[in-house]
Length: 382
Image (tube, rainbow, N blue to C red; front, side, top):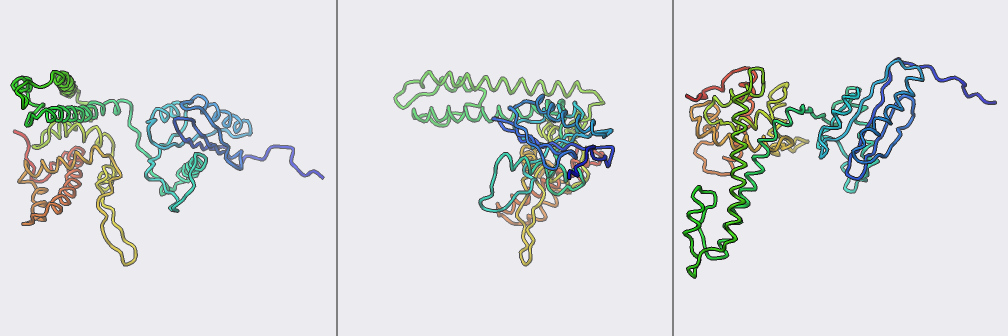
């Protein structure tokens, strides 16, 4: 006797949810899809960058749920932040999905020495994560706050400047190395009079350096010109920003403080203060300056800062902390640093304290740009 039902099962709720996890790679995309219509997740393999094919697979499942009697179907998607950036997130949001981008470093994994890993296992883990996250469980992984296109574009000048400075240092070291092979030492390629000084140099045999060094200098000067043009464009953009530009206003506030010029202000504003934070712990954690204690049973010690945050902002804050101690000697933060350092000459202790000062300074600057409260004892530029 056949006891199978001829009719579709009754819909318990009018609203259904389609959960989608996407494992991205340069070779292919693997998509895992789960809905109330399926007992087990279905998997779909797509070509890399095939966003239209991805949405077509989602739309087929969504249409099937609507035909089964659901009046509304939510689509919740998830993928890990990485090389592909956020263009897929924006595409999915534009189609009507609720897109989540996961911080890969926050995902809990099996701690076995030889844990199995494959795209199939990874996408299934992401699917479980997004389902649990949508249900309210926030402990399996953290979601990234996705910047807007304008915010991402605003970061480019500062990041490009850092890259150009690295290239300039590499060219400078190469020129010094080439001169050393000819017995010439002490030449500084980054000085403004570098061509005049190069013409005056002589090898051990009295001959001028090889003509190929002129080409190296030309490459160095091209980078110098690019850095100068970038810095000029950045100053012009800041001067022309209106009062409704929140990030420009934050930069202007920061630059009122002694020890902070446009470079520090640009990095902090574009990399950190472009988003909102709930409290000071969230600020420190975002930059990777939050402490990471290890307390278990009789073991109780500090492992140092977490470093699970924005690397550019973290290095900038540590550099700014050294600058702050030198140029803001009367501030409470500098007094805190000097009181704990005392008469110690330990370089290790000084470095540890400067990192702690960087965290405190970051929180103080966050309060300054959000509430206008100047850090205690800090001096403004005249």
